[in-house]
Image 1 (cartoon, rainbow, N blue to C red):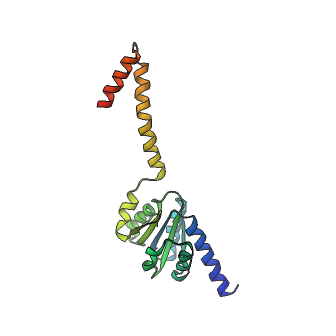
Image 2 (tube, rainbow, N blue to C red):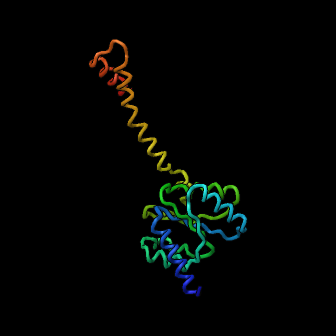
Image 3 (cartoon, rainbow, N blue to C red):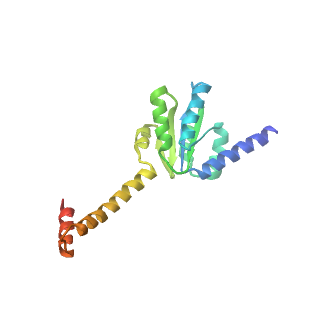
Amino acid sequence: MATLEKKKAVVEDATENLSKAGAVYIANYSGMSVGEINNLRGEFFKGDITFKVYKNTLIKRAMDEVGGYEDLYPHLVEQNGFAFVEEELAAPAKVLKKFYEENKKPKFKAAIIDGDYYGEDQLETLAAMKSKTEVIGDIVGLLLAPVSNVVSALQAPGKSIAGALETIAEQGEK
């Protein structure tokens, strides 16, 4: 395969990953051994996160093609790894933060999440974000709480509807 064909294939792969991603994270992996990079890749894999190393010029071509990644261009220097995730948009931040705490690398550079830019000083904030599953659980809990209050009030012995409403009102005031 000719060099030009290889480059086109890499740009196509990067374009596909960018197109599917809800979030893209960039981390500088300079100074990491092959073993450390493989360990990091394994941590990303556990979280259903795609981690790729692309040449900066080739990922920039893919970013140009997809659009919306201009804020990341200044970070396309040095040795970068790119984490792509479709659903759990904070998952790469959690992996990067934990791995950095244990190994002092890689260095988080920036991310684009749902079209918004996050700089290197925002990794803590991103890692603290709740996952989609956690947010849905919170919402379901909030929605079910009033229903359980109604059910318990109606099931109380000797309660009329008026008494049940009074009990619910009292619980709502608490």
